[in-house]
Image 1 (cartoon, rainbow, N blue to C red):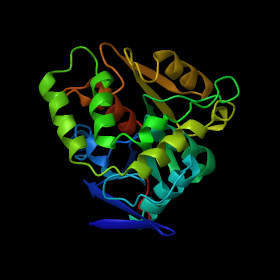
Image 2 (tube, helix red, strand yellow):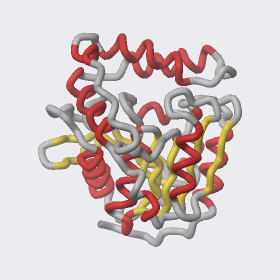
Image 3 (cartoon, rainbow, N blue to C red):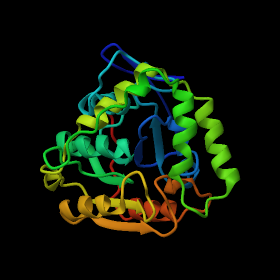
Image 4 (tube, one colour):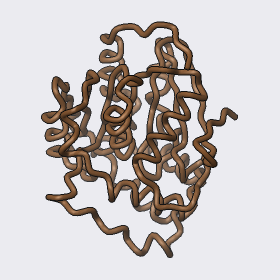
Length: 266
């Protein structure tokens, strides 16, 4: 098992493929294994690196609250452990917030940016949501069982949802990890800063996303200079879950269009 360290926090990561590195940053309460349908689509041309965020799976779950800044530092630690100086960064949902902050604070390490099913929150206009107190007494497995139902578009086969549910059920998710990640999501604010992103950017959104409404994706793309915006009909928040998801092709085409990175070591 490959391990990176950010201070006292140990982070599990792994990789597949060769070529220019692509770092995948997963969303709230989901493990790295939930990239399982994009992972093989990219690995024939790219070195694809994934990791469990703090609070979930095989990574440590330190006491919270966490911040998006903490999780950017975790991402940097994973790249350092992999010997990668500069990478393409793909963040989904909460991971999209982490990816935004990564690009804002470490632009020299970002070759390009892909933001999926995410937003640029404005905590002045949209106050931070309260973390449900029920999280503190309901075991995470019950929360996840309910949450997964609403994340898919209407045409996703039941067997696909069943596959994903099996991964989530097998994933370690301590309550303090769930609360720590929830605090990071609730506090994050980037609306007035994303215009400073300089990396080539692709923004992706399912048209039937009930978790992060489509309009939020449109706003995000409009604020980042030169960002390309792609939507997927009939897809929800978990738009990468379809076996033949068109998002995989769009992502690969975007990455193939970027200048090649030179051989690099930290």
